[in-house]
Image 1: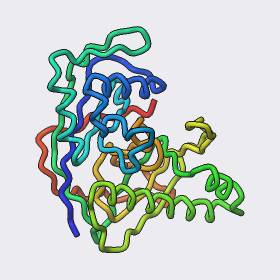
Image 2 (image 1 turned 90 degrees about the vertical axis):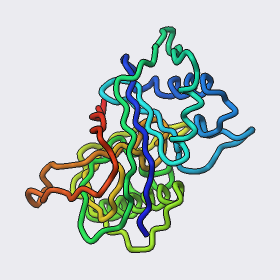
Image 3 (image 1 turned 45 degrees about the horizontal axis):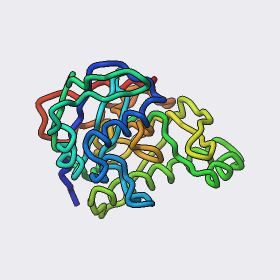
Length: 250
């Protein structure tokens, strides 16, 4: 059934490197107060196992937050502070707001396709990584990734309380880049993938592993598929007066 999801995207002045995103998360979580779990997803000595509702990203080289659902309400614990400045890598970032976009997105399974590119997508845990590498050909590997991406969409839906009651269709059109990256204590494959699906997903959320730290960012895709020019994707209804920031993959 359709589901309306509140999304807040905030970009801040200043530059940040990709490897500094964990430090950004730590600094903002400490500023907001570590008792507020959604900022860091730790509970006691363990983890909050669920879709990250506050995500830390690098957008046009700037630090950014993307908050979804309950994360939109929780983020006020940071913005209520009189001083937003944080310390990262020995320098002070004042965290002045460069742009802010608050919108309500309609999540739904449609009878038409939406086109996306997902960047730095950590699709596979270590065992699945080995399974992927052992597949016999490109068609089998593509089908494997399609199943994983559908699984990631369903995990996202569960994490924000959306019951998906129709079949999800999804086609991976091109794998633009694949690279090995360190993740926690493992080496995983990170993919940049162009795909289409019948789900109206919100731009700039994350899918897959490490979504709280800028991995698996979705953005609308208008590139050519191998088979030719794809038709423009329909735009689902949403309440918004501001265009979202452009995401830099660097």
